[in-house]
Amino acid sequence: MKRVLLVLLLTSVYLISLAQTAKEYIALHPQKAWLSHAVYPVDMITSRAETPKGYTPFYVSHYGRHGS
Image: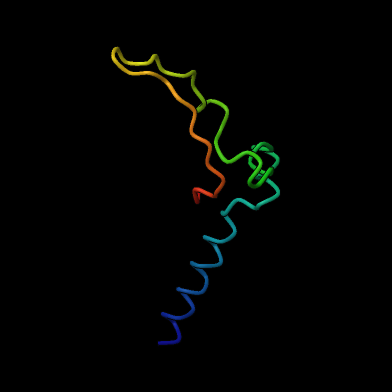
């Protein structure tokens, strides 16, 4: 039993040592350190779609959090 626990412990320590730290991740992706100020990546933002025929565009004002 001690051998199994030792193997599990050494395996978990090895796997943790391979993990990327938060500082390394932020250094690679600084735009993700902006918390809620940059929820969506810039490359996901696209231009507005054309209005389908027969429809009129309108503005919806919403004051609330959508939960992303």
